[in-house]
Image (cartoon, rainbow, N blue to C red; front, side, top):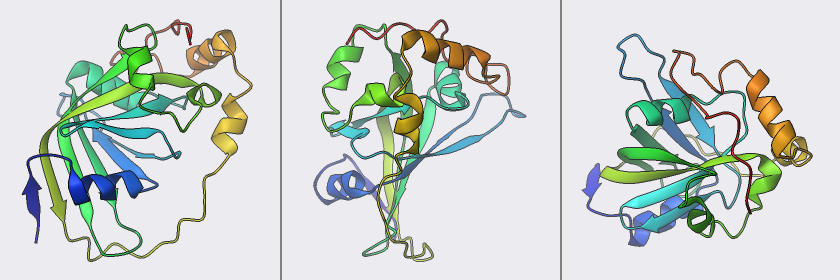
Length: 195
């Protein structure tokens, strides 16, 4: 039932781009470290850059586990499920890196996300993932669920922040600069937005 793909194109790319939510999974190298699994959403915050590279916007939140794990070892799996239509699950296993606001590549990467204003969501980084293994599986046991629309809570919460207040918010959070396992997370002070 499952199939391995050499690239993200055609039907596979269309499926990925149409899903309103996806999940990221990362882990530290330590055998007793904390595995992290995160849901990601917000329409316009994900992009396929080429046949083997995807990216998503990393927004303000309560921690930075994914960023910390990527900085340590780069391993990441992204997963999409069909909650409507034919059953399908797609996983992209690969290597990722957070590209922070002061990186010379940052501005060029942002051009891939024209349908969202990242600054109203407290943009921290663009996570770029290079696929090493692309697979789909049946998804027969995934339930049907209806997509009703985007929540506006995240934007309402972070739209009022500027660079200084966003940095203060991140600084006071326990697991933003340092992960649950003590790994370096988001570099602070937060580089200013130059956009």
